[in-house]
Image (cartoon, rainbow, N blue to C red; front, side, top):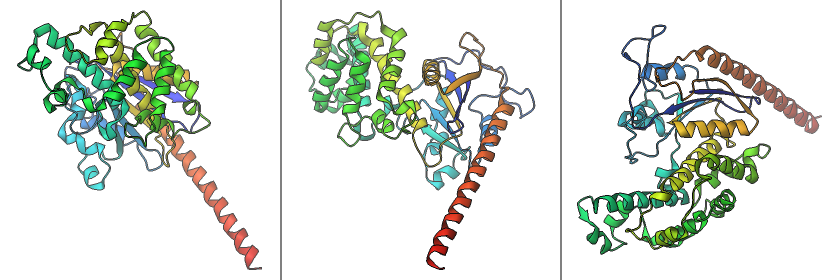
Length: 380
């Protein structure tokens, strides 16, 4: 868990929770008690979320981001994060008043963050993910010599444009041209961050295969570093730095990938592509939080995989706008964490509400004076 504060009051506070996928270990022993002091609660318990929701006001909205995308995102984390994907939570992600009334905590603004799972507008980031799905398919197929009861020989002879081929391999052969461009971009480590950002930004969000990252980039406040393409490149560079600096990319393997050869051993580049796609999630989430909107969040809560959370924290710190004021690091194996920052959160948001009202009042007085001045000009 990380609690970050900005040095600019126009930016949101961040409260970030890291999930350990594939595990329910070290949870609190009892999470069925009432809201008594010292009571243990799951992060997804309605009473805990209601307590967070109580901090939200019309002038100080709270946004909650989860590693999830759309109702048909059927992936499972096998961890507490799955609770936020259940049907009774799905109404929370929708914006209509009818759906909000069916949400447990309607005063929190809920958001998706995992663009790897999005098929909206067939975005280019999803195509990166489709290559990773293909690689995992091939690894599994070569290990077992069959996949979903279909033998290797049957897969080799299958029509690549068929629905079953697309469903299980992740490859939409009609997008072959874009997929080949992606393979060309990632086939070398030389200036990889620059080439990836240039590539994403070449897919304008009005094109047939838009970049959702570029769409959010275009909405940034111009005076902040998140509106600077060079800063985005540095974000990607730092995200990659500790992940695969020592990896040796096999040119022949990428040639086989370009042919969608299902007999090849793609294991050496599996994590390579996983980390690229993971960075896209982090970058998209931050750009979406920071974009220029009429009523920006005062507090942004995130619940995603622990690796995502640590990378988001590093990105925020590198912007020089943020500092960590409280944290429980990953070396604490106990997932039953103390939540003793609630009072500070409440005080910080109250100050923002007062500042917002004061600013609105000044704006109102200025508008009033302007109207009077205009009226006297014409009615002397």
